[in-house]
Length: 243
Image 1: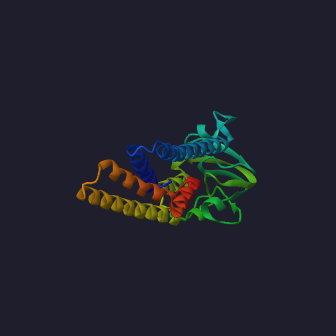
Image 2: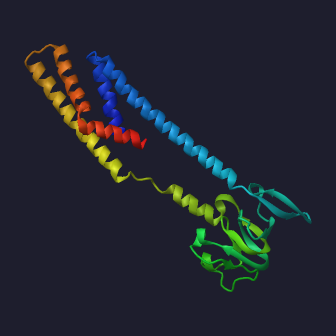
Image 3: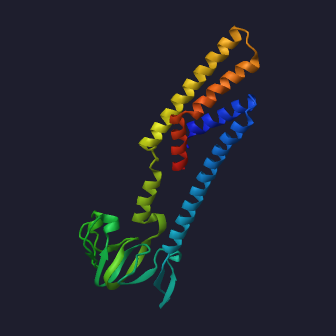
């Protein structure tokens, strides 16, 4: 449910409580609580899925340290480590190619290049080279498709090219979908209409010296009719299904 819809429901529950419609109040609050539970459950599942993916994304790598080749977790890599590479390896960091024996890398996930790119240890002639043309560099998230070699780690984690892209994506503000905008607009319009009618009822009731309980009852009847209408039921059911 959108924020506007939740506000409408809460106000309706308060009005129902004031006019003694306890059953209506319980039903309305149950809808609000159900919406909150669905939202929390959805967020929890998303966080669990992300955590599971992060665990899968931490491979073991062979590193040359102190004259010996040892196997360590990719998250334990530091700048200056020399990583041994072979076909099938998912690159755990950015690095400079030190050794290349027909080394080819699939970089489609990073550069969009459909064909594997050959990597060499030779220095580039020009210092300002596009990412896809840096044939002596290897990048996190790409895959070795052929050959073997070694690289010197130059960046890890969010300092890598892939990490920078992820950081840029996280900074993008999430916009509401067209359906969510329509639900907000419809909910807001319904709330304004209902409040205007209730204000009119209270004004007429006070002007004609009606009993306060009778005025509350009339106002509450407007809320019940609003919530019982076909359009509003569809509005709330759509919101719950999106939660």
